[in-house]
Image (tube, rainbow, N blue to C red; front, side):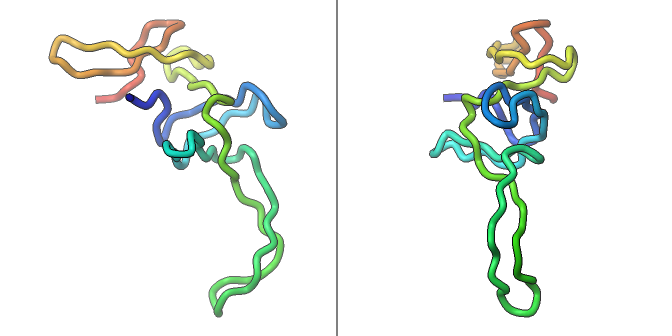
Length: 107
């Protein structure tokens, strides 16, 4: 099945404690149906010092969230939208915005 949200896309959170926040997708975890978004779902982790490079303490990092809690933000109309698929004349399958109809994938 084709992915509707990919690494590098801008998404908006539609439910939960970070509702309304936007961020860039850093990583997609398809087996877990989750993704990591920059600046969203920040959690604190207690880190033990490891070797000489790492300093211990409480660090903040992004935690994965389910991809059903986010919507893709269309780059042309700048709104959270559902994603559809089209097959172009050359046979390539691309994603498009269901609100404005513009193609999301870059060539």
